[in-house]
Amino acid sequence: MGSMEPIASAASIRAAEEAWFAAHPGGDLMGRAADAVAAAAAQVLAGRDLIGVLVVAGPGNNAGDALFAAAELGGLLGRTVPLWVWPVLERTHDDGLEAALAAGAVVVDAAGALTHVGGAGLVIDGLAGLGGRPGLPDAVAALARATLDAGVPVLAVDLPSGLVTDSPVAHPSFAADVTVTFIARKLAHVAEPAASACGRVDLVDIGVAAPDADLWLVGGDDLRAWYPWPGVESDKYARGVVGLDTGTELYPGAAVLGVSGALHAGAGLVRYAGPARDAVLRAFPSVVAPVDPTDAGRVQAWVCGSGWPGADADRLARRAADGVALVVDAGALQGLDAVGDALPEGSLLTPHAGELARLLGVERADVTADPLGHARRAAAEVGACVLLKGATQYCVAPDGTGLVVPAGPAWTATAGSGDLLAGMAGTLLAAGVPALRAGALAAALQARAAASLPGPRTPEEVAGQALPSVIAALQL
Image 1 (cartoon, rainbow, N blue to C red):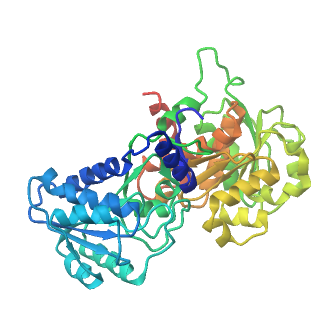
Image 2: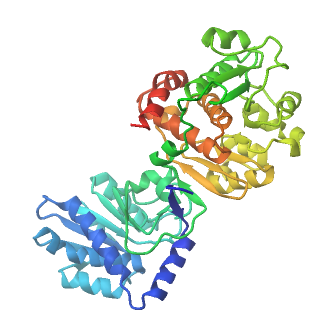
Image 3: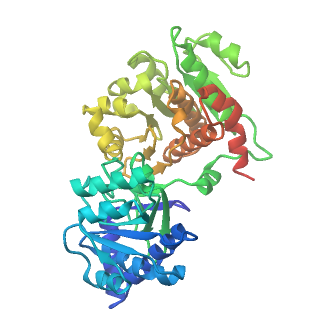
């Protein structure tokens, strides 16, 4: 999948570690991990004299990483570092604890941990690992709250305890300032709302190759590589002709916003074939808008459904009959049954969580608890790529391959943003970008455009004022 960064599951990380140990009998991964944790901890504590460290230690290897790291801190900082260790289950990693005790650590209980946290300069969270359960025991939750209230930085080993590796759900957890992880990022590191509890995520190479993945994080290099840049011989047809059958007389704004997204994303030609013709032409005179929407002319992709008050099976079927890729948005998602197997190859569905729930016959809460799993199910059942919109956006293919788009600013959660996104995706499909990449590329560009205009902005401001410059900046 090119230069994209893999997102690994807990199971695949364990398998990668087992393979490494099989090839390196007696190898010391814990020492490498502990060195990385110690370096990150020393960075937090640098310049802060007589500030101690509280290690919250579980029974597993994460505690070993944390305890060995704590033992190194005095040497790294060139001073004595007061250390307190709370073995939450009254047992912890034996060798790690021995090293910490040799460095002067004092073992405390839950009450002692609460007493010392106010005077600590850092809490190292080594409680749970990749297999941790959701949420925190009551005593640990009390410490996590006290740590947050006191403004004490938290460094999490691999993942803030309380989160689940393969889930974006924000279970009660430590709120880390820094998370040090190894081998590859995991879903909780990159998907909101869990990602917000991870703080800055430092991915450290400890010599274990990242496992094969079917889920990838989209970055700036990917956007640059995927965008359909025009060449010196490009004309409006070569750049892509996108058609929009969107909006109604009652909801013309959806049509205007979709056309804006299509134009500002770089369409060579936009054809509008819907009932909001007058509004579209007033806003964008470059659009070709026939009086008879059933005779729109040839296009290379259609955008349908934005601004439809409900399913319109005939309207959707008319566009599907052209045999070009469709962006199926909003109301058109309710008419998919009428199209059935006639949905053109290369099409893209763009639901939000509620729309995906209706499409699958589940509760919205089910989708928000496992957005990636439900997007994959929909893509497999429909036989088309699905871009699930939200804070973190997931674009998945029928074979389960998935792309994760980092979250944009929360300001983008406004009416009309989805209409804009559908138009952008249509432009990319028309230009020949495969649906999986087109959905992720459109979502990522919109997020970047919104981030470049902080504060409450309308979707049209994001498109007109920011999107072209964000796209152009990819080449700089």
